[in-house]
Length: 298
Length: 128
Image 1 (cartoon, rainbow over the protein chains, first blue to last red):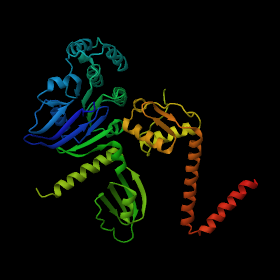
Image 2 (cartoon, rainbow over the protein chains, first blue to last red):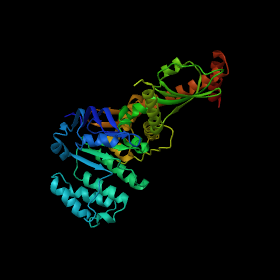
Image 3 (cartoon, rainbow over the protein chains, first blue to last red):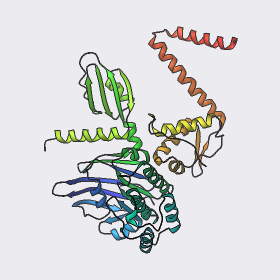
């Protein structure tokens, strides 16, 4: 079976001060997708729509092949969802939470839950309100992981965590992916985490998907070039150039769609070619998309 | 099998290239002998905590270089040493020659002079 795990097509959802417009996402089994965007870009709204917590105004959403939000009860049996606004029951113990989840989901793996408890340094007897922020996040993730869902949907899973806890969570995510039928969608503004573990990356800004592709494709396409020109900088009309900085005879170009053939078309001697990390690519993509949007007559 | 590979995020080289180079070194040093099975793509990704697509990309590169061979459904293995070692040495030689050519060009050295210098170098090697 090679059906898509997530399929959102042309989804629109309007609020009074914010509109999610024409959002399309697709995730294959066995892959991790990172959903990256600035605060308020629409990441959580997208995830809520996907999870059936909101109904779209237009477009279609399929989760594990089921239409959302209509068939959410069936779809969610196989989806583990954690968002950073979820809370444990403050007066109940972790053991109580685990029993509760096990009673709802037949796929609960008690042995795996015990392993995770140990790996995360948690104890079943701990009461939720005695847990630190990081421990709460780990406990919520444990409750989702031990169900062994086919899809994990994680809204900002690493935000507010210290570097050690973050590493522990990332290790657990990657462990899930040893099984090639399982998938993860996670949102984050930590581009370092996303760059490391994602197969697919979707950039979202101001309610729109501004770029989406395989991570390696992103990293291959983008470069920063430094060159020196004599006299005035040429007015290149190349679509690949998304940004230019001119400082006297020094020119810095940010390029989306770099290739040897592009260098030939540029026709100027380039002194340095630098790869860009995902954070730089993200910022350049967002700035470029905003400029393009503002230049368009509305 | 634990891979003992190491990925640095402060390394300027992309992650897939770090994997390629470390595997290449292990193979060249003989630590990973011909025929040895490599970790599966998913297992290595989980070990290194990098995405599956990154490891896949690294394995594809190693395959096209002839460092490893992938048998459908069986996994990836270190390629037969002879062809591999020779190919790698040839690739190294080509890289050095290209660099020499680059320097000669920047010195505006005529081709004949460069060939002459190569011949000198070869003779020096043999008389030693």
